Image (cartoon, rainbow, N blue to C red; front, side, top):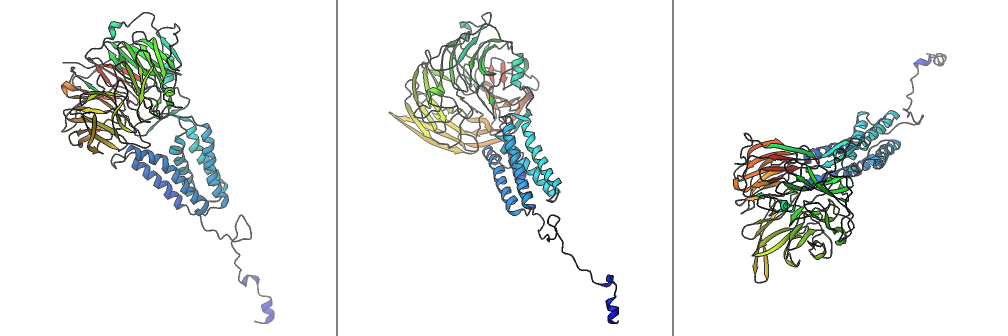
Length: 626
């Protein structure tokens, strides 16, 4: 080919130069950025939800206790969020705009939700909303392969808005013993609001103001138009239930019999009615019962007729305690003594009332007396103990103001003592080594006081930092005392002796097999029947060894009918079960749904009538006797 031919060769025969790939964002520059690295974020959210399954539906099978479960709910979302931040800003290989967009949409959504949610949801934003929001954002990025486009960015905004936004529309109406929340739309009426709409006061007559020995804002009783209770009605006899968990505070009924087979002779409902929120139990005398509840901005002590459920009188104090786990209302149970009713409110009001009329005799604010600024985390829960002319309660103040005693007639302070600052248990009267004394369990351990002077007789230190004790001490034959702690911390059996003026306390055994949360136990023939977390069990008290564990009643309560060896159990979901007290196995003799909703209150058997309640409803059942 001549040089001329070469000069006229067609252009299409020339080799085509390969143009460098350019970025759509910056034309003319090659896009050398590798694809986004999304797998670490996906691994993080998958690891979180695998852990959530392990501590929630599978926790019993994996032997995860409630404390570990709570710690996971609280800390895991924050740890995952911190690692997610490291991934997004340093390892994701997203564009810097998309890195900041991912972090910003989640952060801004959480900040806005913080100011819009109901107060009951506030604490749950980290525990529940944050994991959902992170998961939604990561799944969206994985599906869209982290594309740096505006539709993907707008999808992240939508994921954040929907995840956080859901929690602004709901409220939490309590958390059960397994840390499961009850959620309702925040615009729905609460059970308490529905109750208040139906509530018909016994009388519209204005109530007299309660005389105060301390500083307590009280409005006095709402008295009936006609007297229903006389002094003769208030004489306590065998079969009555005058204080928390009965006359001996041990949850045991003596001298009574009931039908021993609920499958053929089920209890008969006599009545049921709404009740204000609160976790009080009942005290009874004859055909009269007393309990406590919340009515709007007032705590109420209510007297009612057991036969009909009709209110006879009510006394109210201007006080409202609320926290997200158990909600509003009093936690303690009244105490009936010598015609007077002694009550402890969740905010600190200690009242003495005329049990026949509800008229106030005196009132104290134990929060002020103990030098405290605020009530404890779950409210003052100690049911007053009346002994030797004193009313004794637990306040948890420092400088020896842990346990407070007042004159039962006047409300004037008598003594104070103790080192515990944290307890939801109640003073417990017993006799050990021939000496009458008051036991009090707390974060400090177990302390014993002389009821007249408050002198510390002896103590057993078992300090719990940041933990709590709720259950009553169990006094056993041979001057032995069992104290228990939840969250897998276990129980101790102590032997108490006295030589001269010296007391000696020896630890006989410590077991992790029995760790009750807030569920008291009963004792029969050397065996304990109670709850280890949400499961019912039997323990040999001689050794501390678990004999069986299988009753699925949640975080319920139990009562012992001692003469027949029968256990009456109220489950956390409001089921009543009759169980034979048998150390060899669990034998259920019948079960039925008695209440609806979360049920933590102790049940009461008086005569042949069984009283049960929760924070929404109370009912009376007739249990046929022999």
